[in-house]
Image 1 (cartoon, rainbow, N blue to C red):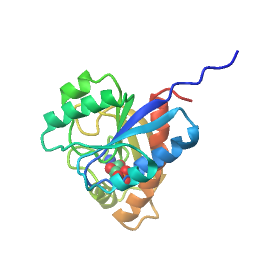
Image 2: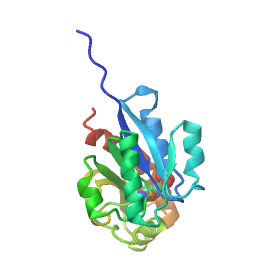
Image 3: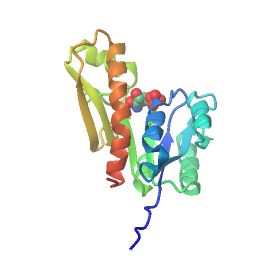
Length: 200
Ligand code: GRF
């Protein structure tokens, strides 16, 4: 009997206004050519001028702009776009605002985030971008890495989906650590999405 092709799962990447989009690119690359029944069906930006917009246009990924100035309006519009685009999973990548408890509770699809450190260490409010790597470097850590986790009511504290550690003893600056960790991010986000969607 011929197998039934699995339904393609549609993910939305939600980013801030300054996102480079390197995680979006890595996820897109992992899922293109039908290697897995997953596609980035939507990218949300909070600034029309975000560099990620051009990247999405190149890749043919639909982009929608929502201002995040007012969180409640942002969440209402986001909810309606998730319905319109029939999204199965949200992947935050560089989205810095804290989503409300009611938004998270009422949503029936998973929300993931990627953090550039080995949570639970070096996470929490204010720990983003180079600040994370500054702290790791100042503490003379021998290892760092990246963590994909579910989003809950507090910053960077939801259940871990996937974490990968690397040796950073060769790094001589926070920027070195950031570059090394970013490669790990690109490696694990798509894997974590497959894990949550139970696609093997
Ligand atoms: C990544 O470093 C991620 O860990 C953090 O935001 C950054 C987004 O980078 N949450 P990019 O826009 O995907 O390049």
